[in-house]
Length: 102
Image 1 (tube, one colour):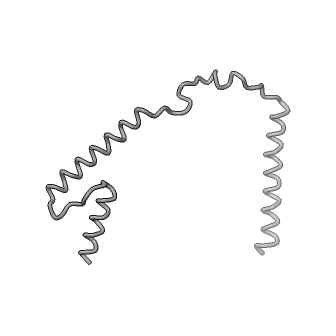
Image 2: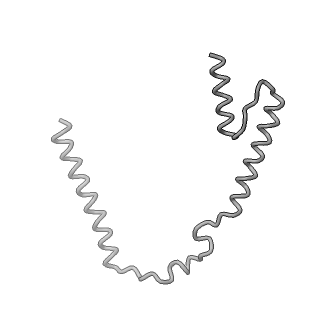
Image 3: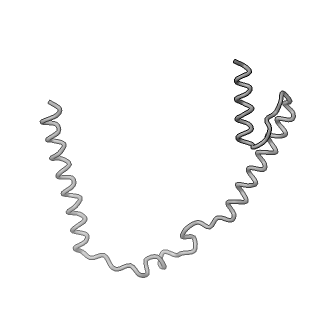
């Protein structure tokens, strides 16, 4: 059982760090793991500098410059949709309670 656990640890180390796992040498393991962690941290740090987030170059005025104004009828349509949805949700809940949850 112990051999299987050691084999699994070695395979996990190989997959995570991309190299050969340590063989009962704790100092080698500590140095190798620290070196690999530093390399991974450096790669992550370097890759974050090159990434440009979407929308970082835009101001809110640029985004909304071509938008058409909100009409009062659109407000009434949205509020009416929410009221109708709430009404039918209550009706559906009542019918389920009456006919299915007796």
